[in-house]
Length: 112
Image (cartoon, rainbow, N blue to C red; front, top):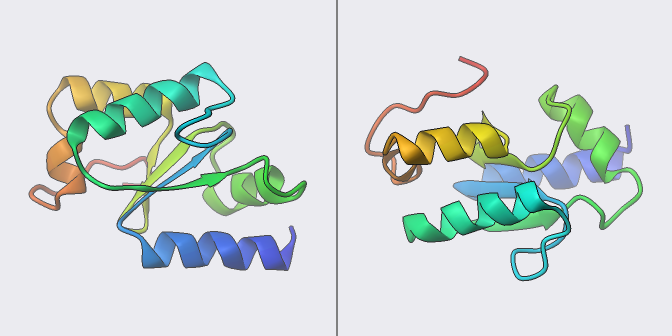
């Protein structure tokens, strides 16, 4: 694991309420799952920060080790891994994502 990249990941998760680690950028996603997750996050109307996992060669393997989650995108809300595109889509469909992001309900995360 690259220590520099690991610190950047930890900093992003600690400093931002909602962080999406994705392939590409919100305006130019590089995969359908990242594009779908961005669309859902935009539908919530809440701001989010994104980080492109293609931005550094060590980013993807370091983030996979940090999160113990094998795929991208990965959504974090207040420091907790929510999951990938399928989980985000399911939570949005059940009306759980927006309240989670806004801190109005206790969130269901993969970790707990």
